Length: 154
Image 1 (spheres, rainbow, N blue to C red):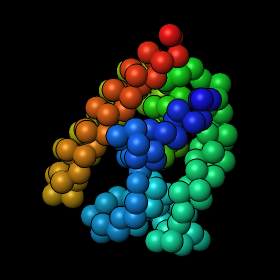
Image 2: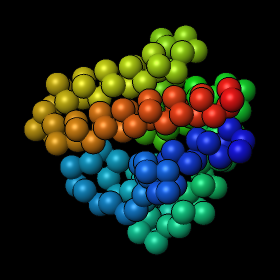
Image 3: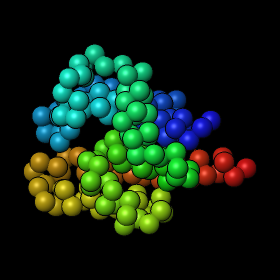
Image 4: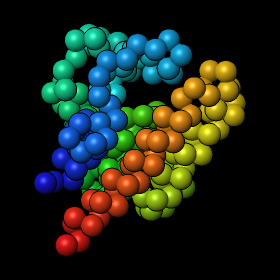
């Protein structure tokens, strides 16, 4: 398995037990708005999000995130955390977190956790209901990265 495949597996493979970006959601309180496989209408207004396929999502992950941010240059599992972060956050926000994490995937996850907690603190009525899901995602990401590290160092 190559690095991109490991990263995409975390995002969309239900067999791995994570499937963090599976399915269509149109929650008016979600900052991403209408979303399918992690691809939002806000970021891709020209896309028919409701009828968007997994293959379409993987194409965007590869072209607009993996290749655009040269994530193949980074080691596993850091590149996994980075892809997940770029899908979830705005590029400038993600770049700042990456800079503060100084190449450490665990610190990058902690940066992202702090980002989510700050959102909840800033506006609990809007973001409080997402806190548990966001923290679960970061916990699952950490577990997945640990498993990947074990696999590649066998």
